[in-house]
Length: 359
Ligand code: F6P
Image (tube, rainbow, N blue to C red):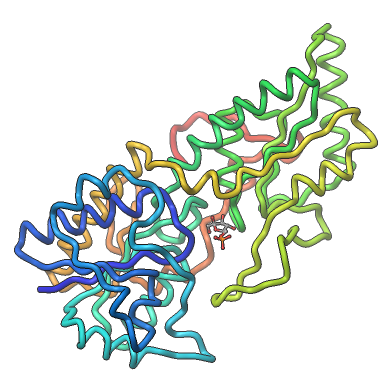
């Protein structure tokens, strides 16, 4: 058995441990593992010699601890309507003598895997995205590490905000889903949290901040600052998301970024000192946390088991804390967004108090 493994989409901490998990169990069974560089690109071009790397057990220890993706990532879509390369994928698999593919990625990479699988390509999937918004799984690789980065960064920002008595916007990733802002903000005791699932009014945000500042002053605090954790996809109601530029990727997505700066600009006349920082890629490049290493290893091991038992066309999801096989097609269903009614206080623009340890 010869298995090809690829990582697609944006990088996320946990990709390398997942590859290590594949290699670990595959080599125990005597299977060969081949790394396919730059996601689906490796199988979507005719001359792909430079894209192929043999992966033996010697890579495990190194891969287990590294952030990013040693196999590199791309947002190549092998099944796009304008440029469908399914036949090339099949030919390349034949040329490389691959019996199965492990695709590690988010909605786009696994969405392409779903289409290829329906066309007879033997593929299994592992979910990754720091946004934690994939259908059919409570966990995706990278989320835990990104949350830890947000918490550490918020603490640093709070020191600066406190020293300068600043209204500080800390922008985090999360294109459609506000989990990173919600849970990162909750853990950092953010004063306000803004998520894509709840378009807000500027007047309301201004009132919430003014009320909080007034309360702090009335209590006699002399160091008054506010930490606002804002998701990159959050937006004022009636307005669209703030885009970084006008470019679309192969899957038709715009890059988001700058909403924190935009809000800072709108509020700087009302509040004396306002500042903005976007964590951007700092959230993605960190070394994987314990959880992302452990989950990467488990996902990788289980992907090999699925291949061994011929269970193609599925990805591994976590449901009610158990690993489950989910049909690849399901990844294209609506993303797992924050349930506003359950988890978000639209009056306080903050997390709702909870009596569970879930989500
Ligand atoms: O989907 C994961 C993610 O990190 C989003 O939060 C973000 O919008 C996007 O990737 C940015 O990706 P890139 O700039 O690498 O295309």
